[in-house]
Image (cartoon, rainbow, N blue to C red; front, side, top):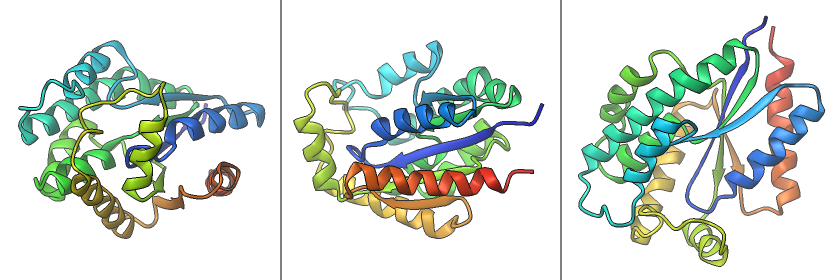
Length: 212
């Protein structure tokens, strides 16, 4: 059986990733491609337990290196238990966040260093690099406004960071997009949802068509 396709979705808070992932899954299934949606940190029991710790609004004393290590630990377990088996089964894995989140949030925004955080995660993921990463680019002010207006969306510890932190996250993502242009595709997330999804479909269709 042909190996599956690993697609990750990245972006700042309120960029609309969750909504688009659901649409992506339904569209791919309708096109005959078996797909699953998962998330980081989380996706499986152990990683969800780590998620509860790292995003707890009361854990304001958490050290930046501790945060980076917890994300890497959750990522490893999720990868080993859910992502890799799904890829081996020939499925398209749609993952809400992956290693680029750690590079942008902890590496750049927290000031730990992109290369330093990459080394932590290199150990965790080994050679499991996404086939495609969709980066939803959005002004932080608009993203946080969306969050506050969405009563059903959880407000976590990262949402409560100062606006300068979220601006640095965006800068970090943009640096990563420049560093890995062959993998990371930037999509303007301030467009109407239909236009955003059309962009998503175009990029994914192109990637699928190039598969052997």
